[in-house]
Image (cartoon, rainbow, N blue to C red):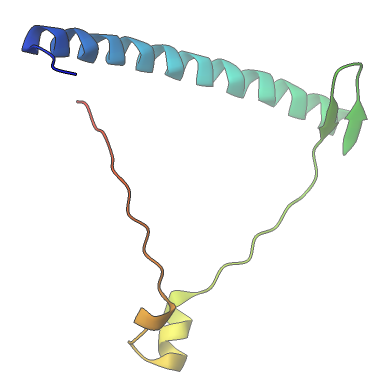
Amino acid sequence: MCMTKKELESKVQEFRSLKAMKEELENELKAVEHSIIEYMTENELDTEITDTAKITYKPQSRTTLDKEKLTEILGDDLKPFEKTTSYNVLRVK
């Protein structure tokens, strides 16, 4: 697809407009999510079932490795334990 600079500028403006809409929607989503969490905590519920949804609000945990402590134990060569993922990133300012 070959695009002129004018068409590119139009796409950039569309991109910015959609990004602004996305931010507005994310803020609205956060507000609705907060209302649901408030309902669950006020009623001391961890599960609620409605006509169209099953809602859960429960503690969750995640375990990670402390890289500094691993370095103390294994030394500076942690390369065999590292995993690198590469991907492209589009940035428009």
